[in-house]
Length: 439
Image (cartoon, rainbow, N blue to C red; front, top):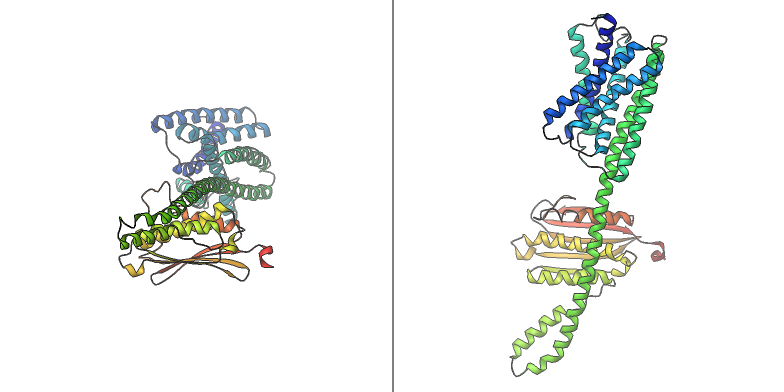
């Protein structure tokens, strides 16, 4: 084989292999297509064709344009594997490709600095020990690169499993174009003048290292933003459903109160048919269902009234000492979601207890300085459920309780904290009061 051709083959295969290996780490989190082996074989065939074409182009003409085209072809090889072998949407494939390319450039830059640290001229050899690389040198070369790729994947891509939303897909497309333009052009220019100034080559490596790090950070940010928007969309949907639930409960309460009011006036007609104790029992039940809870906040009244009905049926004592007027600046759906989730979680906790004396829930709302303090205290039998998790069987519809409460508190500039003291569990929500309420 011609020496020049062999030299170009080694260079092209080495660079392309680095790109594929770097991208392969980020492909670990992707879903493989059916008949993965067949798609992989087809990818290898196409990659071989692209590699042959790039070598031919490089031998045909050695200038800046051919270097640029050759680099584009090299960049396309890992994209071929990703496009053909994995069953995810195009934007996720592009994001994976961008992360892989950035990882490769980062690895190459770090290895160049490592060689420079040992006073090794990279344009002459990749060996730390001699000018003529031995097999052990190539083992060390790829071991270092694979270690760098693995570390980058662990930091940036290990948890990358989310499908991207529309906004993130647009950002990924822009990022892919940035990768092509800002990684290939400076790299080609530095290689063109590599023999003239090794210092310029290292300065360019610094640029590529910084840009590759930036691209990896953007990849992580794109997925984080996509996940955040998805969570917020679910949260908004939960709040809308809870607003409908509140309206329905409010209507039901009004209907029950009306019926209780009518029946109370009709009990005298049953005096000859029922005993005094039976009538007294009926009056007591109607008084309970028709009780008026006045905290100064209509939404809180509805939640506490409904919760008391549930607690009575299960032998749970619920007490409420609340200055609800200080919460009227908050939106109805936010108030309902906040208290409904807090009280429901407390009921869920005490329901599991066997000791009747510990089936107690306390709700307190008061002003403390410039803030409204909401406290819900109850006994519990173990560690509380973490935010975003649930102990309920229907996990598709639950698990956002504490998350939504924290989300609502943040909307109003407040905080949510949880503390335990022995068997007591305390949910503490503090929300700054508006200026007009501080006068």
